[in-house]
Length: 326
Image 1 (cartoon, rainbow, N blue to C red):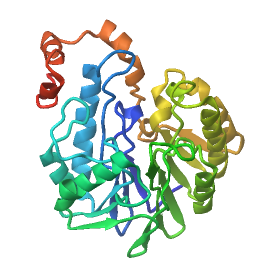
Image 2 (image 1 turned 180 degrees about the vertical axis):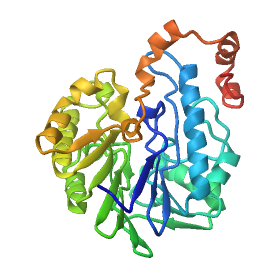
Image 3 (image 1 turned 60 degrees about the horizontal axis):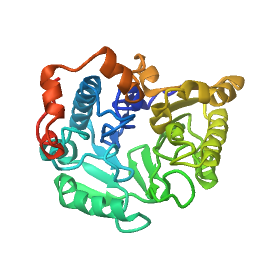
């Protein structure tokens, strides 16, 4: 389908971590999209299992290797699964000042404006990014609603769109379209379906052959996110997959144990028109490695080592500074 644009998933829920980090390469430019990854600090009463830290180590290695090749690194928004903070945190983000330096050093960094159309927490994180990881960039540019040209390739950023439903307290994100000739790849992180109809209109207007999109958070339905918002996200995803030949479906939607069953209308909508929906792992021809919702059975069937149990008993402030023994 794509002959001149190369797409490589690096980190994702289907690869064992919270992320949508993707490497996109054209004959003109190499782009690292949202170079971050994290683990949920607590899920179903359990901290991350050693298997999640093993997956995180592998994903971080892929991100750092891709950063060596990339010309451009993007930041769609300032959640830590979408950019790498410049402080040490082995517990959730597997991050450090040195990792951030390696990722952003000498790059053209195209990032969400931290001063406008942004919520308070991301405004603060964006300001910190500019002072820390962003200072290593060759150039740090505001990307909102802008298009950057690299030879015959364009990297186009959307206006800020809601991180889910209209007026969500989670703020806004940027979508990115990489186009070379008549080939277009659209990266739509954390739009959660999209839940917001205007975001759907923007997606359809880009007419991508491949979309990498975050689905709605099924695991939060009914108590953190209204059920009608979830259903709107699913319905809009049905529209997306009917219009886009290949969809990589990722992120929040895969954190629910019943995600495949609850997503069946999406797969059916795509199948009816001969289109395909896959996870990032499946796109990369790997087995899905969905771990977060499996924490309870993993701790029961694969109990951690004595060393890991001792590490888990450390105060949180110490766990962030000490790499988990895996």
